[in-house]
Amino acid sequence: MKFNIKSVCLALIICLCITNVFGQQKPYTITASINGLPDGTKMELIPGATHKDEKPVAEAVVAQGKFVLKGTLAEPRLFYIKTANAYGAYSIMVQEGNITLSGNAKISGNGENQYFSFENMVVNGSAAHTQFLQKRAPRERLDSIYNANDKANKDIQDKLEAAHKSKDSVLVKSLKQSDAYKQLEARESAFFDLAGKTISKIISDNKETWWGPFFALDLYSYFRPDDKPMYSMFSQQAKDSYYGKILKEELDPEGFKGKSAPLLDIKGEGNTDLASLLKGHKYVLVDFWASWCNPCRKSIPHLKKAYAELNDKGLQIVSISIDKKEADWVKAQGEEQLPWPSFLDKGTTANAWKVRAIPTMFLLDSKGTVVGEGLSLDELLAKVKAD
Image (cartoon, rainbow, N blue to C red; front, top):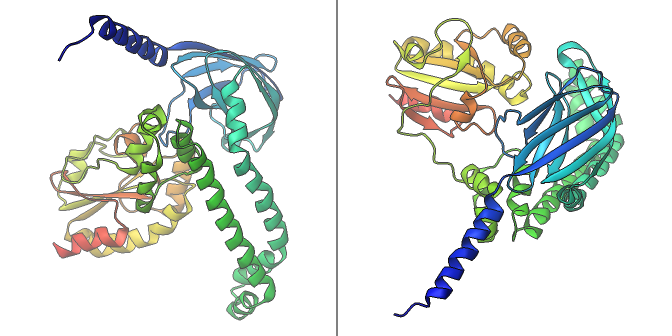
């Protein structure tokens, strides 16, 4: 086979140029002017749509409502602009160049529960952000439908709540047989059907580019096993993108079963190293949770029951909270009165264990090998009881 040397060289040059264009880090500057932000407020720029506990990539302090965030990136990325040590954030699609941001911030709550809401926000200088808003618009319209349904359902919901509080089971049963409750169910069913179709369409409409996997990550907080076939719809370009690679790992994680458990970087009373936590136990069930996670809190009575039944047979439970604020974790611990070791993630443990949703549980043997993951509490306990 003969090769045209000039053609090969030209192809290599083109390839190198393309690599340079798409891989080169380029600077961006976000100049913000937001009314209502107190002087001295620390602002953070945090990567978004990664399903990970990300750290700030840029920080700034507010002076007269103004602050500047700077950094570099290779291609457009979603970020959250938020205040440090408070709740609330604004989503912005950042690209290279000079970007301006203006709007208003309203503060509610106080102390550990302070919340910043950002309103009337205007972004200039980022065509990617304009595209983001346009492509995501169908999702935003769902909010108005949800709010209208909530208003229509308020009367029957209030009556049900009062009946539950008074423990009037007869009234609860009667209300659930009423026309108003049937209408509530019909509205909810129609809404969730519409929401599913709307989100699926946004993703499929963008399957040829990085926007497709991006929206899958942005619009879903977690994925179920039956979501795995979604990945096959995307073009190779989309799969090879930054968000495409993250989505691949989300839908088809490598997992830890049969491997040594990742290291722990946690804080709390007592020994925090894995070897000490394993000592003297046949199995250790590691439970990732948070104070704000209702399913997590609801699972605690079941964990306590299992602990009472199986602790003297070699089962230990270790709870690891992913709360951002230590005070929230301490308060929840006091409320739940956990009888087993309980710790707070310093910020890297959940990522190391590839925790994408909570509650998430792992079962370790006495050597620290993962013998169960991605299973329900009942399935994990069945493995313990079978031994």
